[in-house]
Structure formats: C-alpha cells, structure tokens
Amino acid sequence: MSEQIHISPDGVKYRLVAYKTTTPTKDTSVKQIIADSTTIEVIVSDSRLLSVGSQWGHVAMEIDGIVYSRAHEEYVKIDKHTYFYGGVVNLTNGSIRTGGNLWRDNVGLVLRVSPAEKEKVKRELERRVSVDRAFKRAHPGESTYSLFDNNCSSNVADVLESIGILAHDPRWLPTPIAPAELDAVLEKSKRLAKKNYYPKQANH
Image (tube, helix red, strand yellow):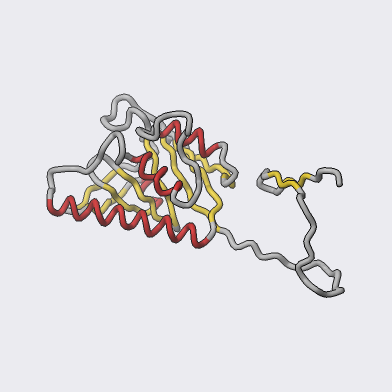
C-alpha cells in the first residue's frame, strides 16, 4: 500500500497507517465523526527596555475572555478588553487603573485543546491566582515573583505542559523560560490553530 498523506485545513499532516472496520453493517453511507475541540490563546508581548520587568517581553493566557497574567507585583486575572485597552484592574488589596497593553506589539497564539484540557488549564490558573492572592493578603508589600521559576513565561509553560503541549526548548535548561523561547516553540506546535495580531497603537 503506497503512503497516503492527508493535510487538514490547519496544515497538520496525517499519514494513513491502516484501515479498520468500526461499524458491523453493510451501510456504506458517509458517517459523521464528531471531534470535540476548543481553543485557548497565549498572548506574547514585545519587550521594552525602558520598562522595569518588560525588558524580555511578557506572556499571558486567555481563556473564555479572561486573561491570566503573572505580573511582577502579583498574579492577576483581567478581562481581555481591559488587558489590551486599559481600565480598572482588581488586585488583592485594592485596584488600579491601567492604560492597557497596546503600547507594544502583541501576538496571540491560538492553540487547539479538548474541553477537558481547557478545563484543566483554567482550574490550574485559578489555583495559581488564588495561592498568590493568599500570599499578598498575608504579605502586602512582598511578591512571589521569581525570574527563574515563577515568572510570566514559566507559569504559562508549566500549565501548557501539564496537558502535553511542549512550551520550552528541550535543548536548553528548563528554567528560566523567556517569552521569545516560548513563542518560538509554540509557533512550531501542531496545536497552533491560528495567530491573532494586536499591534501597537500610536496613542499608547
């Protein structure tokens, strides 16, 4: 049997390895196959040398319109519109008004996941936010942020790899993970469905 290759609309290549009869019937009509999948989005932002903590860029994750972002001060969750365009952000011990994230270029890497994988990622992100907020309530002037193992990129990579999506370059040390490294790995992932662009705006 000669090798047969099928390419999906997303560009993923599949190779025919075998035929298998799954329905013991003579009905040869086309059968519907339901592939239940959904998406999550990893938002990678450009760096800016003049901003403390932004020299290497930033990474956040969006699920169902909510962005989970490990900032230097604390782990926050914010609606996607406010994340990009600015507004009030609720913190553990108060709130702040931000100007959004469009002072720099951003790309959204949309990844295909199953509903169960999406739910697992969401639960883990909620857990991490909850743990960080408990720390901030007890230690208002301190932060759990660590350049090596608790930064914006490492949090996203940890959560993605918990559902089997490689998010760091295995040729290098596992930490620290920079936004550029995570972006380069996910750009090559077979889970990548599409890319969204959120360009810098002139008034930012």
